[in-house]
Length: 193
Image 1 (cartoon, rainbow, N blue to C red):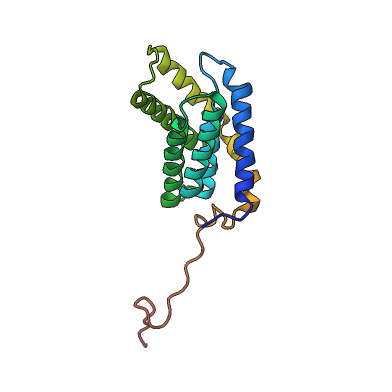
Image 2 (cartoon, rainbow, N blue to C red; image 1 turned 45 degrees about the vertical axis):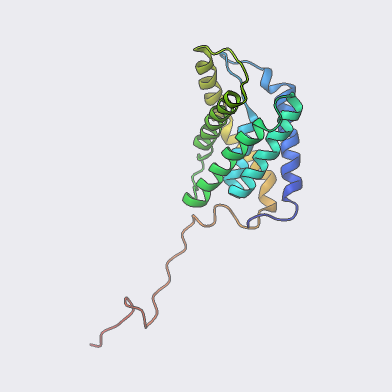
């Protein structure tokens, strides 16, 4: 486990701040028909830093707080964000991304995954909504805006969470020099002469 005891407090403060910012103003600002969605950025950043368990738990908490703040079906966003957080965390655990710009494709994947999951959950719950071709344009613009904000948003989350991460998330990707084989290994067998 890569979490310290004070990690839930920091994640909780990040979740509350992010939901308040999203609901109070950022979500209502329109740029080319789309808007910035900070919620999948936060969940993606936490999952990329701390792994699948922290990603799923932070996704659930963020979705629950968001549903309570917006008065939507309780648990719809929590389900969608839990899946997104878990998937990004598993990607981190399996592939161990270390590139500095990894935030951009992770933000795009989190935003697209959240949009698709919310559409599926809304369909299953029977929420009626008007569907038009403009929805795709809005989703694409939101995806691009989140991609542009990904690097500073992930850097901010990393700055807040880095002190409480026990294991450095980028440490495994830095290759250590391979040790020399011992005298009993196959490569270490020396022939006399």
